Image 1: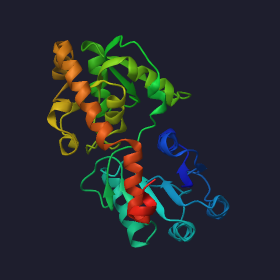
Image 2: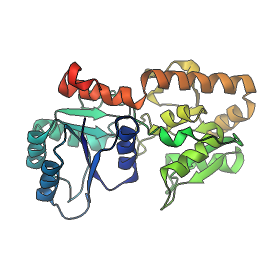
Image 3: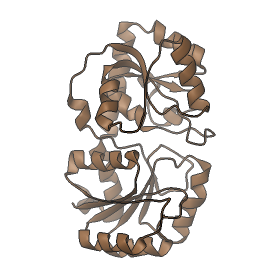
Length: 294
């Protein structure tokens, strides 16, 4: 199965590509600058040259460099096309996804953030590259968070408060960071904080960090409002309402609870959200059960 990933130039896009490669082998990657000059003819030429069996597209909700609907229709003549959206819960994405549907840009639109109300064909969770999780690290951080904090928003308020009074160890995402660096930090954590807010800060979704917590054998401490209850049994995670409650939970968890919670989350993710399971379900939906089973 030869896959082509047509994506914007962001690190998250690379992670989805590498998740595919971790189970299915090398894929062709063609990237474009969604904020730059549109070069649709070059993208079409690259897709024709690649001769893929399937095309995965990861774009942006706005930008001068995004391909036109007519270009997406050309991609569909080359191979079945699947749109992956990791912020489908966010309202700014809804009109984009609806526009794609009107213009028949894709064979399948997929929300990979657990967004039940998104205007897509299929909703699942984020496929994760498992290879960096194979190394061993000492669990020497009790309570941690790795990611962008940046501007003052819902996430930064929680993270900065817990860093100040809740014993939270924070690894700030910076330019030049690699995904293995991020994973090495997660592997050191016993309890992992997640903030389920979307980029706009107005909605909640299932972030890739939820799956990463499982693969890193961490207890997941998830913010209230997350749709996580739609996807996992309640014995797989803990939810907090505010930083004070999160700090108390992280401080009070005993060894047995840490072991049980991390084990249950890992079991659920291994059984239902292994990257091979996630991608195979997409392929079945565009190619049929026989061709989609790899």
